[in-house]
Image 1 (tube, rainbow, N blue to C red):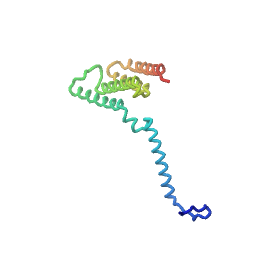
Image 2: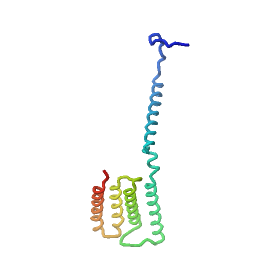
Image 3: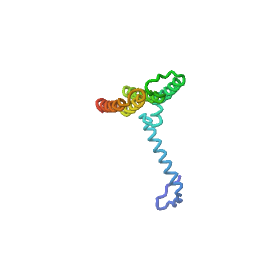
Image 4: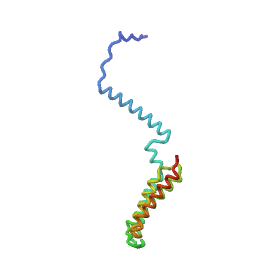
Length: 162
């Protein structure tokens, strides 16, 4: 059986290179990062999982693409109504605004997919008004836009969760 020598009688340890020190620090950092990821995963907050679990965003972008494709197809088949000076892009922008408003409404009522919605309502209103600018008089669209933005801010302040 070997007995451990007191510190004064131990042979000196070979000097460690800075490369070995760096590798040791990297291993410690990786361990710490792994522990943080495990904690986030337990809480359900790991960023990679967070966005994979959000079907609302995927459905939103898919609906925008489908809507744009359907509007372009309707225009090519001359099925798109000609109202005022509306062109195909007015209809696409209007439809995108509706989709943004719908996404905001779903997020407002769904606690599982809740995120801030005031910005979505404002962006949706802006897109709808820009889309409507080819259909109705421009003198009405911009005041309507201001009313929509004001209403979104007012509703947000009234129904804000604390």
